[in-house]
Image 1 (cartoon, rainbow, N blue to C red):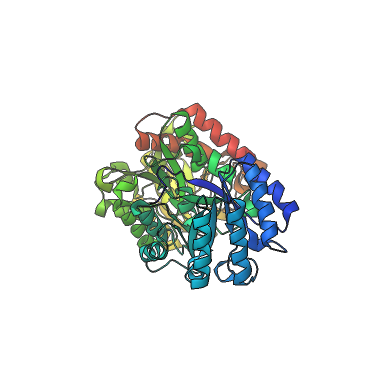
Image 2 (image 1 turned 90 degrees about the vertical axis):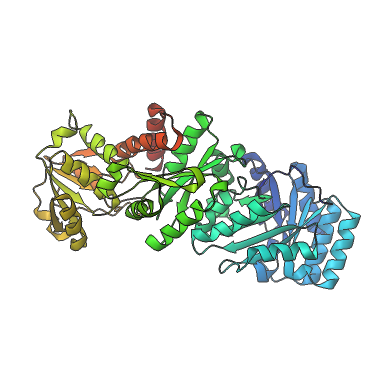
Length: 526
């Protein structure tokens, strides 16, 4: 009989220390930051032994944190090559010392001698529970459910731990499915940046634990984020099975203010939701596969998505083929930046970039959008952001030229919106009154890149960069030096985010709060 009713999801810090001296401050830091359990990786010790293990367990228990002791086999990610006899002795001592959990690899536990020793120890010390783990550092398992069943078959009281590398975010859904369907505590997540979201959402899906690091530098596995981020950005303490999931679909997504902004708004408005980054690599095929995975799992509580580079046109195509509703403005623009997941996973599609861009420009014109009429505008880029900007400009009668590295792409967009197109090499000859960057050049972390060559910018020009992180891009710095009027991407971001929040939640957001969060975060990063 399993005694797991009402278990919590432990936010766990894995501590790799060389000795007792370096171990203690790490445990203290984990406690202070809000860790809910400690994993002692004894395979990282310079001189691992049962005696040292007992001392480390005692230190951790003084902090009143549940303790997991692991002596990881080198074959499954261990730090050092240790003999099985020593590893088994360390786990035995951990049980005697009162560790709440010990973790052993499935392949090693199947060995008759190892199994008989651990079974006997666990019968003698029933307060310790056994985690049996499988790892794959090269890719996903072929059948995660079979591994789960195999672990329970060999030891029904075990907590199965199944961890694998995600080659793409779509590999995470196998872990989500297992967590949703399991009838006993289980640990399942994907490693790597593509799998990061599976760590963040572990509590939502009822995992027994997930791992976080003390800081970005001390992560013990790819894709780990810090305890502080889990607690302060991703609302760890508020997550539960009913939490609705929102997030940003794009590549890259690490620069996004979305998690900070939306989660703070959810917090202040007491909305049971979380906003996370969904790194969807690839193009239309991979994007469609991601949304198909979402739509087929309406029970998991996906609520909606912001959509960014390079998937805004993919989102429109998908919504037209499989969605319930596409906003007329999104259809006219030819791009979607907002998806709302409705009943049975059916999608509705919108574009809030249009209003955000036009209102941001109008804010420096001392008037409204119609003051842009007949103005000469150079738009750099021909992707999803450019579509919304060009549509808005053409709508108010601006004279637009689209500049792009791939000229044919610029010509295609220009033909659609009845404006001009040119290669990026022709930009130095522009006589535009307004220059707008709609590419990702200059975005964090590649902050030294600039889409406009020297000599183009002048004091009579208005320069608008749709990139918002950093707040003042290299383009805007150059424009300011040339005496131009500048508009940063934060203004557009705030205005489109307000419209997006209302689509997601149904209520108006607090504009002052949004503006404060965005500006404080961007100034902090600059």
